[in-house]
Image (cartoon, rainbow, N blue to C red; front, side):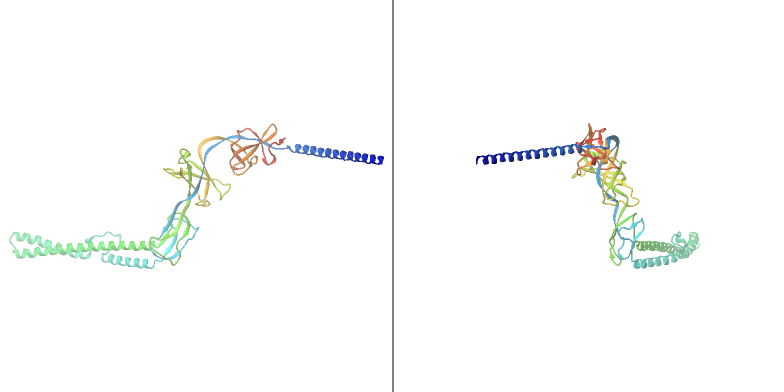
Length: 406
């Protein structure tokens, strides 16, 4: 019985030894596995064939950054001078017109009838005056009635002069002389009356010509013309519609040139002057830069925004730019500043306002936070974070912070 108990005890000890040995072997294997993983991780911190470049310092024109919007050079609600019935509308929204182009025609039937009546009255008076044209020089002495009265007046005057001498010589009686004098005075009055009537008739003719001009102008006013080169924003009438005198019939804008309205902060007001060049971009044409010239500066600041409104004139010959477009602009100030410029690929964006580049220090890429501008033809200006001359990774997508580069 004792021997049997001893055997059982020995077997238990042997079993425990086997378990311990197996456990030790498992721990050794796990340790070796962890060491192997560390060696692999360390190897991944080394990057070969990583291209680098130097952050360049360059001198560029100093600029003032602003925002603004494009506006039409002129904007008008074109009105009809006269009222009437709309006969034709020759343009529509988006139509491009030249100054003087016909946009709307009103019915001219009544106006034409009034013109014909005025012309007929003027022609009748011209015949009575014996004129061959309306611009012929007028003289009352050439009128038939005046000529007849003048002949009678001159004859009576000669008789009066003769009888006056005879009366003074007491050759004729007082009765005979009074008769001659009365005939003379009557003839003179008839002559003066004929001259006055001829002059009055001529004035009537001038009035008739004025009525002709007014009637002709009325006919012309029934057609609405474009007051300047521009584009139609909206047509406000349709054929058959009745309009009153001065009614708006068309909305028109001048789009060449355009006005770029800029808001200059209070602290930068002293840096703006007429004649400065403005470069700007709009979202509608990404990658394109447009140019304008400062033409007008407001005399005072907006009391609410503390900004000064500045207008730049922008050529728009092709009409691509439209009034109302938002613009990001920069004004060239005529001076230079030193900036740091790097390739766009060297910058890793971390949102709208955060970016980083990787500066190589003792062979290790160190992430450096920077303030960067927008991409300009493959390059970025570093506004803050680099001094220039640093060696940086050309392609930020290849590395992470702390990676050793070769």
